Image (tube, rainbow, N blue to C red; front, side, top):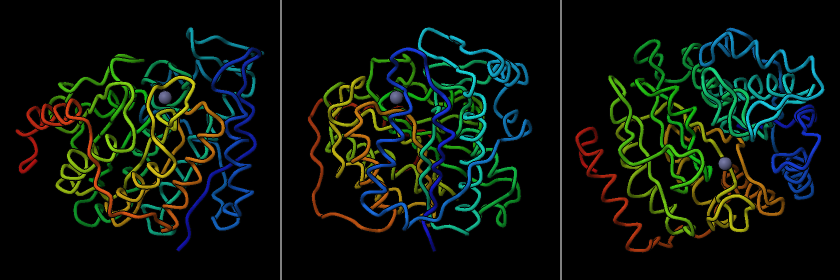
Length: 349
Ligand code: ZN
């Protein structure tokens, strides 16, 4: 079975009339690198298509969808100090969501083995009722709900309507919008590891979900300067034990590459090989049904090499797995605190 790829020139329609770190050149850089390496031809293309109102409104308010739609009538809209929309942004945003929904359904239903979606605008800061942090619609959150609505994947057979989705967010920023979307939801486990304190300010250890979703939000905030060892250890010590217990049917990844070494906004140091290893670890979950959706990442060379490494991991090409990560002691103490907070909800961590 093939690896799916969402990659569409219309995502370039979203562009600011001034210099902005989230610009169309990001996708061109990644696409160019994958093309040059001969990797695009090895993927099965999943066409982007416009998301429907019904799909969007499982996560967003009707008023928010209308507000973003109205930006198509103006040359330029400044939605918050960081977040813009150009005349083509609404179309790009609809296509990004729809493309990711279709890729996620194809993977969940076993028509593709896994996938990568090279999307703009990004999504994980977008809240139910407002755009934020370069994000207009929450691509990953809408895709998770679409898969659940379809009753796709093995979970539907076990328990109709209860497809279990793990969202892993390795973007350097915390995904506030995604966290809030599933705060009280026991069927979606949201795991984020991110630089902290940092934009947007959420993502503390004690933010663990509420109501029926208690313990289904897992935050691992990390100090600036962390790299492969710390991120891999966060997966090994926190994410994987929890995720194996949760037993997801599908893994959606908010795959920002702004925790890469050399990023313009983040201060982390993940290498391309590190992203390959993180991806490889996720393939051990949900029968390997893993979909990576681009979020941030602002150093063009770093994001191109990191996306290539992630895609090669999806193909099953893997580097030496024998290395054991040894994070700094201060970071190990963060994992201990996460364990203390989450232990009531996850036996055995
Ligand atoms: Zn980010």
